[in-house]
Structure formats: structure tokens, C-alpha cells
Image (spheres, rainbow, N blue to C red):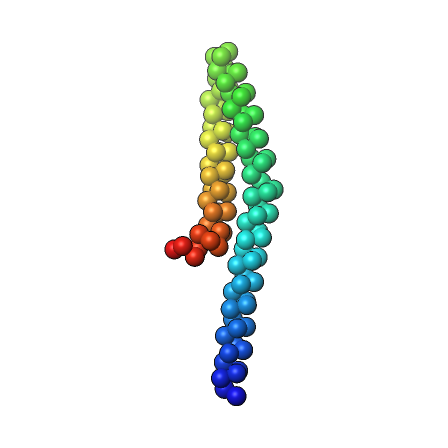
Length: 93
């Protein structure tokens, strides 16, 4: 009887772990699908406007460069989080 209870508890614990991993992966996919396209689009728009302002020697180009830098940092942070949520990557460690 003890062995069957231990087996059940072991399986129950591993199913909770699987559920957590599945939820982690689902959230990573939602974040990737929802935010990445918008951040990338904003980055490229800002980059294009900045280039246009630089041609006109506008001081606004420096401010837009800062915005582009912040967007790029957000994109990299998002990418790192999504990569860290990849179960295949976790198994390779």
C-alpha cells in the first residue's frame, strides 16, 4: 500500500511540474505574439523618423535615438525572457 501511495504522490508532483512548464510556455508564447510585433514596428518607425531628422540636422534626432535605444532594450529583454521560457532550452542545461 505504501508503494502505491508513494507512486501516486510522485506522479502527482510531476504532473504539477508539467502543468507549470506548460503554463510558462503558454505565457511566453502570448508575450511573444502580443508584444514583439508591436515593439519591432515601433522600433523601425522611430529609426526611420530619426534618419529623416538627421538629414535635416534636427536636434530631435538625438531624442528619437534615445527612444530607439529604449525600444531595442525592451525587445532584447522580451526576447531573453521568451528564450528562458523554452523547455527545450531548460532540458539542455
